[in-house]
Length: 107
Length: 113
Image: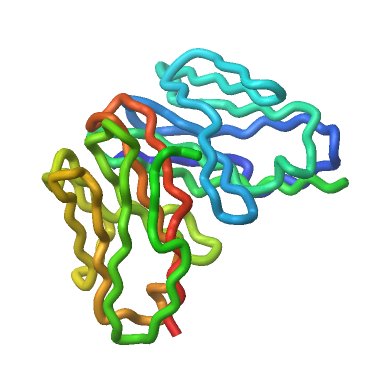
């Protein structure tokens, strides 16, 4: 089945820093999404991005489907950005999640 | 608000018991997915339904079962519960089988004591 690898597994930054999270996948996919799981456990949709580049405020994402990777950029980090960021791939039928990147933003 | 509704939000039950988790997908979405997230673990795919039919199975235990009803809501039944079944259970929905955005409910936090 499709393999999804996220890096780095953990990231600790100071408020105001920028970060880049990476998602590599092993096969062609129907779509790709980025989620943020906040400290209360909620999964919040960030981007639906099977290809190309999208931006939403301080966050942006790029997926290069032909090279099987996606990047999530967070600029000017805030403490509320803390949590786990998941990349999710939709293969033939099921949704496959990476193991996540745990981001901690210190004030 | 994702539009996906899961009930109950919290559930505490004893070992050996049976519980039912309910999921109402977003209006118009035909596909429903169930996931389990144990403490500090990733999201483990359990099962997927599309328009009432089972379409894919993941690491779902035999003690667990699910179904999707004609009104498209779905239920996940967990029986003979064990301490290790304590987890956050998520439901997600998407419009079709593939190539469409998936939205997650707020989850049901199950604690088995």
